[in-house]
Length: 125
Image 1 (spheres, rainbow, N blue to C red):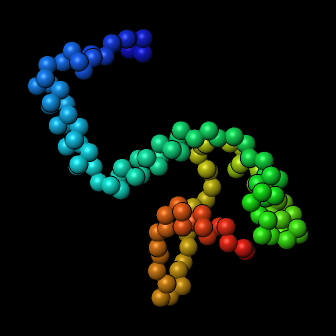
Image 2 (cartoon, helix red, strand yellow):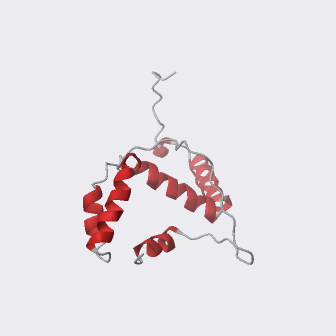
Image 3 (cartoon, rainbow, N blue to C red):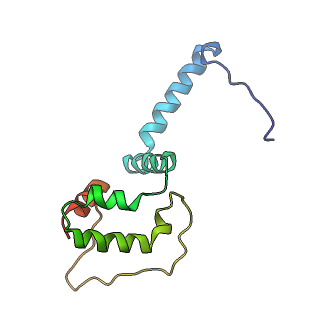
């Protein structure tokens, strides 16, 4: 089955009624998909299409952690180096024990978008 080639029919060769039906179907499909599903799909496509490469941990700390003292930068680099296999540029399953958190009484969980998370990690420790 992998060796079968099926040429696509040009939309210009289709009868007008078929073109209209395809256009309507496409429009309805887009209307029925929730915005959250569309955003999640786009996010996954960006992740999968990204060009992953091994991180230069020294450059990452030097370029992104100027707000830290030299001593804290050194400690951060030591920590990142300890877990260097996580930054090798590959995707895959992360085999580890499940993690759970207990919230303090009266606290509630919240979901933050990527931009909110990025802002929070740029704040000094």
